[in-house]
Length: 158
Image (tube, rainbow, N blue to C red; front, side):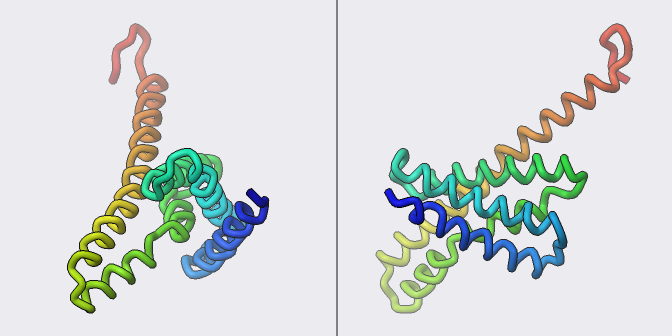
């Protein structure tokens, strides 16, 4: 496969995240970190396509990568993870699926409406599950480290 097939969509996702960073009033290096997350998400999405053959699973892997990126960058910069995460996830949001679902609903085509609705909900659910898994794991690790750091000698916790 051609290199541009991978990098051009990732570059577009990078630019889109720059635009959303401006919208969310994120400045300086934070803007590049958010855009880097969008680039990474699309790269993972595209690289997993030949492996899983399902855009829902691709979205899950991309959300896992974006969430891990956002958690790491937020901790390195001592900033909230939410802004990095939201901006980087924007290119993966199934906006087209939402549009076509509503188009089928308005035209009265029940079969296509339900098919499109379930697929769009699957994509959105995959993004949510990916974020939830990484966020939960990060919280468990933080709680474990805090518990070890603040434990009293002899293994007793305050």
